[in-house]
Amino acid sequence: MAKAAKPVYICGECGYESAKWLGKCPACESWNTMVEEIPREARVSFSPAHAAAIPLSRVDSASASRVSTGMNEFDRVLGGGIVSGSTVLLGGDPGIGKSTLLMQMAASLTESGKVLYVTGEESAPQLKLRAERLGVGGDMLLLAETDLSVVEEEFSHVAPAYLVVDSIQTMVCPEVSSAAGSVSQVREATSVLTRLAKTTGCAVFIVGHVTKEGAIAGPRVLEHIVDTVLYFEGDRNDAFRLLRAVKNRFGSTNEIGVFEMRDTGMAEVADPSALFLTGTNAPGCAVTCMLEGTRPMLVEVQALLSASPFNNPRRMAAGVDGNRLSLLLAVLEKKAGLRFYDKDVYVNVVGGLRLDERAGDLAVAMCIVSALFDAAFPASTAFIGELALTGEVRGVSRIEKRVQECARLGFTTIVLPKTDAKIQADGAKLVRVKNIAEAVKLLAQTQGG
Image 1 (cartoon, rainbow, N blue to C red):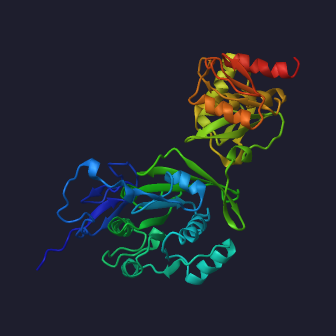
Image 2 (cartoon, rainbow, N blue to C red):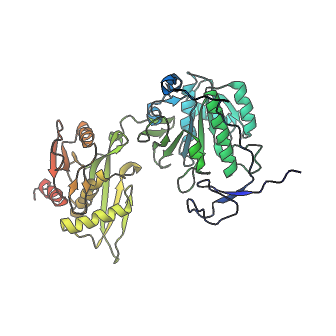
Image 3 (cartoon, one colour):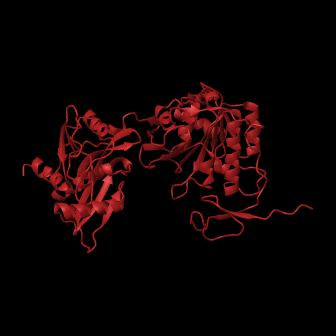
């Protein structure tokens, strides 16, 4: 009689395997992530039998041609369009609009090939109602099924050019004894879908839920199996959504797509710079230009200061790293002679964006200074520069593109580091500052003091 296989324990975060249960994963150091799994034989590889190595010059690149999704913003993030045989994993918070985005894409793809939309969360009538609400048509095929063996059988019968699976956590492989959504089920289901994509050339789109930390639920190896990992980000109470690539074997991961949620579905935002500016000229406001990949975006940073009744004043930031805010306040106190020891400081980036790069340091510092003196900068003023601990305003990467974007949107005064002396902009006055003290003096000059 065959010997029963011993169970193994697999980390749900990184895929680390252990012969015994561990409270803490030795690989990723996550707690309580080890899940029991009965090992089984691996599926046959999707590589052709007796495959022979061929020279690079003989490889046909025509098979890697791209097909447009029908949405320019989506194409931008994918690297120019959909590659045949690719597997794309789309993650995001519940209700953020993942299914809406993919249904709009699927309806557009029906013009270039057969589309099979598999759902394990909704029924076919529910999908029909959503399509009517979005105003999309097309002859896409709908399949409400969670059994992956049934999906495989229908796939071989239909032979679609595009496959959408919503979601991977609802798919069940009959050969795996664990419940749907478990580590083994998610990993096996993704492997099956990837095998289908590579052997048939069908482009597969997979929807994945995320954990409360924002990572895609399931084992980390899930992201290693697929070709592209996309995250759909945004606040459910806000209309704007960002589509970001964190892995892309067929393009850059430095691009983002901007969408706006409307009653008729996701609408592309071709000019996000103008979208995130309020146009107000009030104390505590400053504008900077951030780069998301190769795309320049103007964002507005706002600051609010109030007297603190406590010995330890509060420092709160939304869209700006809290440690970076504390560092900038320390530089303003030491190098500009300002005092914040009795002030609560609140900083916010308009539109729910996150200002991670150092090019926004000067704008954050100047909006705090503006709030401190209750004096506003002219509405046509923008700030670009990194702030060092010495108080020096340092240069940033690709500043030419940032300055051109500010000038395009009508900003007539752009404050930037003195080190970038060769930068020019038509229709805009470039004010170069050496340190934060010189930048603070600009506020007094604008007020006539």
